Each structure stands twice: as structure tokens, then as C-alpha cells.
Amino acid sequence: MSGFEFIFALFGLLLGLSIVEVLGGLARSIEARLRPGATVRIGWLTPLLGIFVLLDLLSFWQAAWTTRDVIDVSSHSLMAVTLFASAYYLAAHLVFPRDPAEHRELDSHFFRVRRIVLGVMLALLACQIVYYLSVPAIAPVLRNPLAIALTIVLVALMIAAMLVRGNRASAAVMAALVGRYLVVYLL
Image 1 (cartoon, one colour):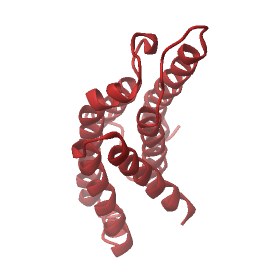
Image 2 (cartoon, one colour):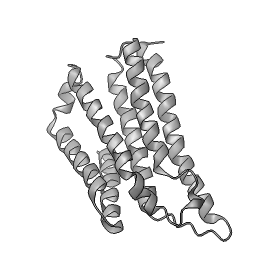
Image 3 (cartoon, rainbow, N blue to C red):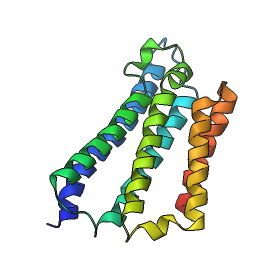
Image 4 (cartoon, rainbow, N blue to C red):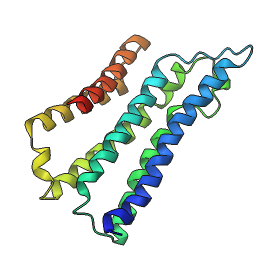
């Protein structure tokens, strides 16, 4: 087993649990909506946030592959991976409410958690960029003009999603965030 495989086993477990948190929250929300006499309105904002978190998790999982030749097993790398993936788990856990039946509509939940979720994800993006820039074998990839432009768009949209007011504007920004990832995956 290589050092990357050893570290990635822990990383993959924590990121996998993050994906389960988002999907489980969506399932609980749908279930609450389908109950007889249910008054829960799911809306668009919380599911869009969930889709964005899933796409971001997949993006980071894929990006972690680029570190496979430069990761060394150490207490520092294990701690860093644990902290990083745990922060993703925290963000994923907050996307959907624990008990959706306690909410009349989930858009209000979105406005309560969006700054925390997106703030955590912005901090993780910053950590990822700083780490990648510190690795000579990876840094040139980040200096590519397309990578820089896509990162600027991502950061701008994330900040906008944290700041815009109103359901329509928030839905438009969240849809743009999801669309940005879909475009990147298709490139």
C-alpha cells in the first residue's frame, strides 16, 4: 500500500460520509414532504446548496488524485487530511435540517446556514490552493489562465451566494454555481 492509498483511505471515508450527509438530508426532506398532511415546502435553495456541496466534494476528491505522487505519510499529513475532510463533513451536515418536518419551508433554512456552509467551503478552497501552490509539481497547473479564471468565477459566485438577498437572486446564484461545476466537468 502506497502512502497515498493509506492517507486516501481515511480521506475517502470522511468525504464519503459527507456525501451521505447531503443525500440523507435530501431523502429526509423528501420523506417529510411526502407524509400525509405534510406542510413542508422544499423549495429550490436548499437542494441547490446540496447539489453544489456534492459537486464541490467530487471536485476535491478528483483534485486529490493529483497529489498521489507527492503525499507522504506523517502525523502532519494525517492531521491535515482529517481536519480538511472533517470541515467538509461539517458543511455537508448543515446543508439540510436534521428534522425537515419542523420547517414550513426549507428556503429559510438555506438563509440560516448558507454563510456557514459556503464560508467553510471558501476556507477549504483557500487551504487547497495554498497547499497546491506550495507543491512544485502541482503549482504550474494552478497558474494556467483557465484555472485562474474558473477559480475567480467560483470564488465570486460563492461570495455572491453568501451575500445576495431574496429567493430569486439566491436561486440564480446557486444555479450559476452548480452550472459552473457542470461546465467544468464537461471541459
